[in-house]
Image 1 (tube, rainbow over the protein chains, first blue to last red):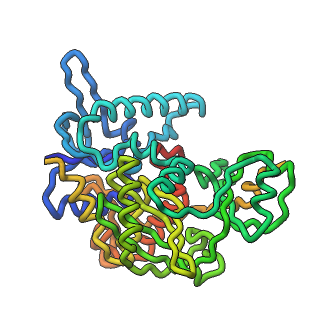
Image 2: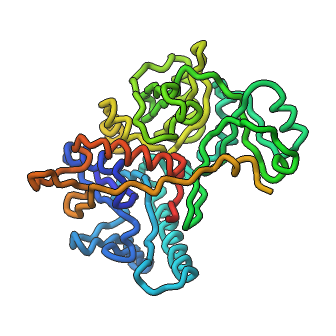
Length: 317
Length: 70
């Protein structure tokens, strides 16, 4: 058994896996993909049908096809910052590496993945998630995704509502990067604003707390996140710099089974599912993060997530 | 004119100074304590461990399975 970890050097979450793999004396290679321009070389020889990974610092060569289990975490591209290249040239070279790695993933497609990169991408679409969540019987908040003003106006007519991004929270301006959290809509919406872009709107749920349910196959590590304690974290627990109180809980059986069904529909071995628990005890599905973070939960609560991941990651034999 | 969502954007944290660095031999990040002893960052009791993984969750929207372009 040999495990290949696709990630980057700064990915502390992978450190948890490395620690556990070492503890269990499981053979692995940590492939920090940003090193491809430096200490790590790829050698795909189609004539000899040899597909190698060479780590110059370890002075080791790995046959890619010898790996049995793959953990896809957070691969990054080389930055090429010190090479005197133009931005266009850097981008060109990064894309070359990107597509080389895409090929490597295809080369390894018959291996046991946790999670498969292509399943992750497929599962990331939040609209698709909502459709499937409904199909498996999970309750979702009343939702409208629209830039049709009449619909938006009608949807926002009664009660309080939130707005959030359909995909990514980051605005990647080099000088002034911004982030878009889930926010409560406070002001009246103007027609031109509503029609300018698609708006992902949901009825605001009066929360008791947030719930993060981390699934490793069918094993569920659920915690409540005491988001209502601080004003700044009430709508989106990721806001603010304080560490909120996390408490391990058992998900209600029927919710847990529906989550497992959702994971199966999405072909995922791992998923971090966010719920809102309302004041009446109802669970509202928000989203599933197919490659979501989990290390801070293990660190705060002691839940053995990394141990379970390694168990499932190495289950191919 | 802006979209509604952009009205709710806010400046991102500048990021946290990492107390750890990658140790190639160990294949993980390490910290050095006051006595000069090196240990895996994940074994440290530092709040920064929590902050750094949670911060990544914030920065990456927690769901970015594709490449992260810095």
